[in-house]
Image 1: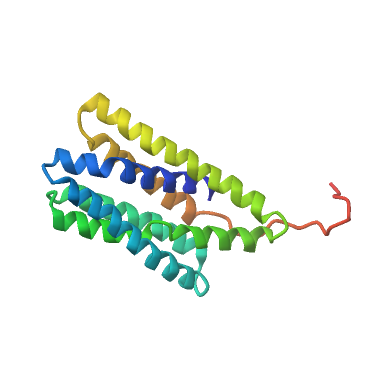
Image 2: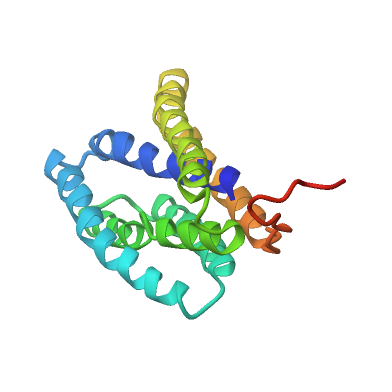
Length: 188
């Protein structure tokens, strides 16, 4: 789950950092990029709230895997369609609905598997992985652009890492580890 959360950060910060430049290269005005980021923000609130409710009723592990897959499908469709203001807004809405919808699912899985005693520490480790992914998404997107003069390699990387995250999350073992009662020594 921690590795998959790295992919989340990678995808999100690549899009946040490079979508406006990509749109400018496609000949679209800067207002389209700014509007897309706004649509992502609005839809993010709706998606996170909705997925949180779904996570209370269905497998959080499976929902999390599906979020990664749906994001990847949205990216593939967006890159395959001709760039326009309309396709960008549809892409922004889809990505926004899935943007941080992973957070309630990751938190729920952590709490269920490990309890609340070390929840903050474990959540911090998982979130640190997300932040490393964010850094890599932003910087590697820029490096890919500098090396190739376009964002094709960057978009391909988003697809590859999204598929890896889906597969890792789908196969995740969600069996809680054996817990040692507080105050009792561990035995081998």
